[in-house]
Length: 224
Image 1 (cartoon, rainbow, N blue to C red):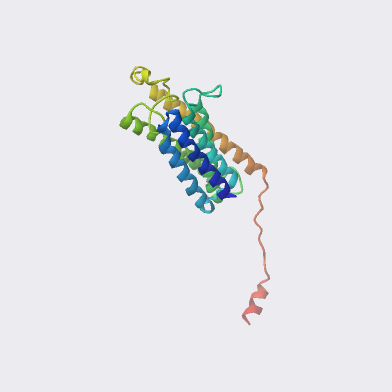
Image 2: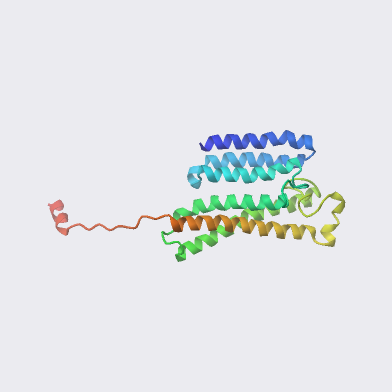
């Protein structure tokens, strides 16, 4: 099932490439290729990552939402909320689920033990790290190529309506404001995922440890 989801995900990213060319948003092509490769990588290591099909599907869906920027959604969102906010919330929600699923193997049965609290903080910070890498790619792309489309540039949906408004970066801190909103929606997505999984752990009964005792006399009989 993992590979079926993977194939469908990769095909979805590849289909968006010609659409990006037609739409004049070819800046999205590099990340679409990266998303396709990352999908294969995650599926290949699904066992080691404890990655279940629903979570893999959500991760692909989160990346796909960003890929829909090739259709111009960042400039004109099809939803009442900015498309950038949607992609950051859903994307980090999915990655938080992925990280939680991997870290969960070391958690105690008691939901809020000291160890679990430490692991929950670790999950939050690790997921925030994913968001930080995204922001870093945007800034590095802006330094290299300036205004444009996609994750490796600064453009519509990043706080500026068009190339004509690039001076807003200097005048009102357009990039700084955009990064701030991105981090807020990253945090909301991460916290939502963690809340759901913590509640799930609290509601699902865990098997209790059992101790078995054996008569010491059995040991001597085995030795003899």
